[in-house]
Image (cartoon, rainbow, N blue to C red; front, side, top):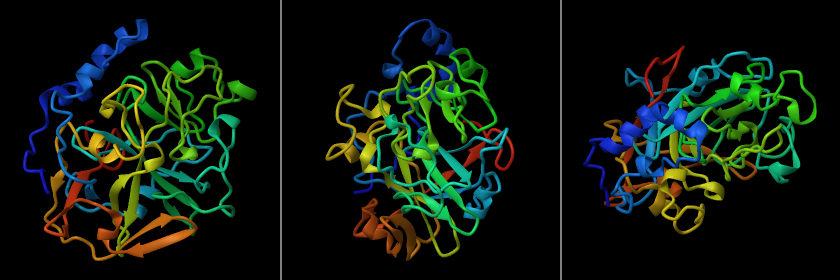
Length: 328
């Protein structure tokens, strides 16, 4: 059943996400929890029955393609990278859209805590729900932009590429040319300036990083948003990786279930649905699952449907600089 008719963002949630910076000083001083500001009163009421299938568009309403995003791919030598953000699975829930050049993001065979690094392009299979361009050796991944510690959002949670060590991380011991625990990772980190939580995008859906000079206050990874493409290489979001799925501000019980049967109900409660698209639903989508890309109809992805028909939604990608200037 479609419950997306209420398209007015919930005031308390919008106020938190756009005004999180007002609380940074308090966060740095003490362990003040922002969860009561981040989670609307109606969070136990599902917005829709399943994850939305949403096409990614630029601010003018033009669908974004793989090549559009690849222009801003970061590498081990990148000094600056625009923050690309779209809302998913609900409005006012930011998600990073990252392109990494020279790496194939794969499902790790070992735990991130054991220190595995980037996987070479010739080994293993791409991880479920990423976009991998073998021609240019670029991986595109989407990760929740809500810190899994206390819910801070961009720009306080930000991706810093391999040659960009933020001042705040230097304070805890990271060095650009460091060794061992002080070494800033080759592809950089998603780093939270509120309390220093660290996430490694090269590790995909298991991205919590505790290999540096200070442990990450967050206790689980940024949930990974699943991506697919159509025949024109337009990009779609279609769900959340079940291996680490519930966004921090949706946990009904802190420290509770982050995957399994509660995932869809928890991640679709509170907030407002993304907006319906007037475009036609694609007949076929291509996505990575297992050892090779799969092409199938959208209904096989388990996305939101009304009267047995897949509903197509839309979400806008904005950036702090560069391609699609906007605010988040």
